Amino acid sequence: MRPDIRLVGAVAVAMSTLLAACGSAPVPASRPTAPSEGTVLATGSPAAIPCSYIVVFTDDAVSTTGVDPLIDNLAAKVGAKIDRRYYNVLKGFAATMSEQAARQLAADPAVKYVEQNQVSSGDAVTRQPTPSSGSAALSPGDCG
Image 1 (spheres, one colour):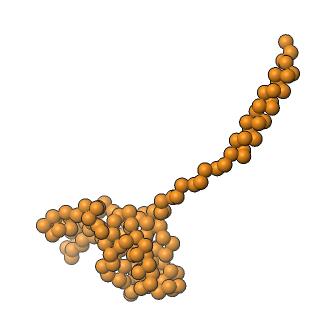
Image 2 (cartoon, one colour):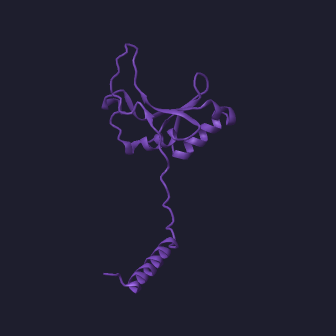
Image 3 (cartoon, one colour):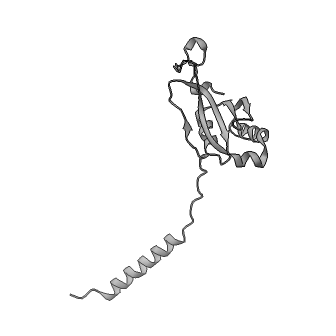
């Protein structure tokens, strides 16, 4: 049995029209992407201090802009409260911020790494701060 040439032709025209329509359809605008996030060191450590992070800069970033402008710019970018500035052994700062803000800074090209601050003691034993000290009672929403 031979296929009907008119039917094959009609199907071919319909497929061509459909493919042409799909190819020329407008592409929806892309959704805004969330800020990229990097890895924060020492999260989940039993000695971790909630909402407290140390941000260390790359050597290249510091030589280009200087330490203070870089600290001010990055802290403002994520809403961090600067607690301490480091200029000697390492270049960077310690700040109070949310874990999400710390991850955003960790992804910044000017940042070498971000590490959650930790409690340490001279006898090499680390303990989680007790709620009586006030720091362990913080939740992530209390970081700001």
